[in-house]
Image 1 (cartoon, rainbow, N blue to C red):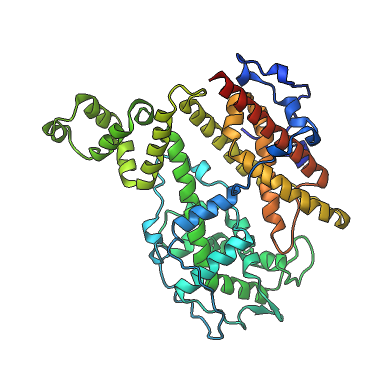
Image 2 (tube, rainbow, N blue to C red; image 1 turned 90 degrees about the vertical axis):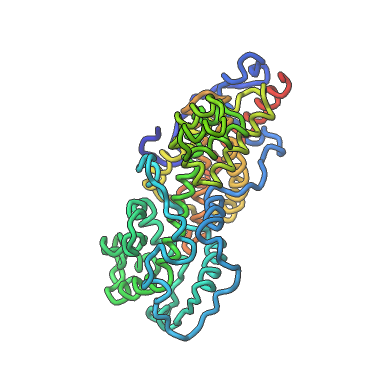
Length: 458
């Protein structure tokens, strides 16, 4: 797993060497060295390998959120008004009584807490604006302009969302199983940690310069009140759905390794799930085969989870159908799912251990135009690579090299999110971004070449 990080450009060291076409032999395509591939100059790569415009990791999560608790929100504008909101739509309800959140309480049992409690990123500005407008429309929330103004400056609700999520993203998870709003809310630790003056200082309301700059108590109190009135429930819904989606992804990876997936056909899996609550006597009364009866008995708990989680079952059956259509394809789907699980664990480890302690760097003003343009190009490649990490891990058979690529992909995604903030911060220098571009580009080429070779072999 990942240990604590250094600067981005030194996050992982890989050996140098050369990899040519002659090294990709039919008998050892899965044993190629990634070392030189990851460090080759990007000018050597064909432009066709720059990847497609797939959604990035955090946008994927946002889409999942909109398919969950926020799915019922309509895409209408939140209309600011001058009528003071009492907050009754937010704070006088339990957190699981609003919208459809009551039906999305996570099932936490059986999963490691340290994996569920990984960092939670804030929404991108575009996604926040869209989702929050819908949220306000559904909840009939109007914004009192006087309340939103501190010292004549309007509070940026998106910036407030970002700062609170950054502070609460990793720690809020432990409070989710509880039923009362203060414990469910990301506001919980901000209140108890007395961080509101710090958050207010980050938003520009500085009364006490220093490190960190802080606001006075009046501004901090007003900011906390604004958060409670307008954002607390929204953030709670978002982070609950985020962790729930993480849980489902982990469960899917686990189920793909069980005999339910590897031993039975799609129709048999459906039958096993259907009879998961039946007794052995009831199954025999309908002449269910002994093989399937033993299957139900041996995996009853997992089958009952699938019976409850219809979406999870649907995805699992789709995966199984794909496997059955491609019998004999190398590598096997079972092997790729193991690679998926390995990559998931490596990514979670990096997100928990490294991202929170990455050092901020300075990008000179004169470099920023080039930086922004390059970041957009690298982000496209990183997004494409993110979908291929499991295949890279399988073919390369080198965990350290997989870590190198994972670190660059996640850093680029995180940097792009940070660039969308009102006060952009940097975790990658221009040189570090160029190195990430080279590594991700070469990894993409590596995967494409290995895939072509395997296609020829088949």
